[in-house]
Image 1 (cartoon, rainbow, N blue to C red):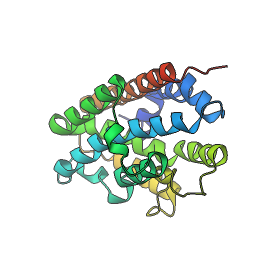
Image 2 (image 1 turned 60 degrees about the horizontal axis):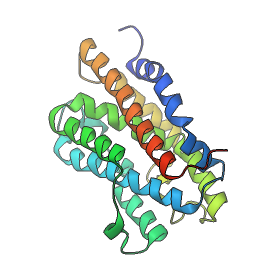
Image 3 (image 1 turned 90 degrees about the horizontal axis):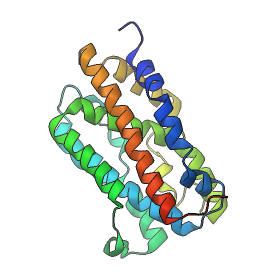
Length: 216
């Protein structure tokens, strides 16, 4: 392929990415029309997905395809658990439950981690690079809407303390994508899985929107 893979994967999934970003639920959440309970429920759903991502990472550290992407400074589960403790109290696990869409999303991530390193890369890319980019908008909105301390408990998920220069980190990540050790056919499969990842994420937003139906 003449086009760098990082460019190909970004442009090929643009439509699905836009659909996820412009969901009714996210529009209501970022527009300040939903309460902190909706934000907490969303954070809870993220916890299930990131557990699947990071549980799978343990088995893929030495994999030639997925291994280079597994970097400790990206890991988010501990931060999500800290946020959920702040949002719901120390016993938040007792009431945590995934939406059906979330369970399907986490199951697909786990399946890729177990059986298909290239597919795992697709899910890794859609989540972590999104956190470093658009996730910062969510953090800013959450701090203003619900009074969280800047980069404090409640928004720790969006704070990458071990990445002082996110722009440089993202450049390095894209270089890893460009050099991923697969052939062109496998690259197309990864692109397709990236689209699927965004679609799974959109289904979670849709389910959250049904649970918090406050669109103006």
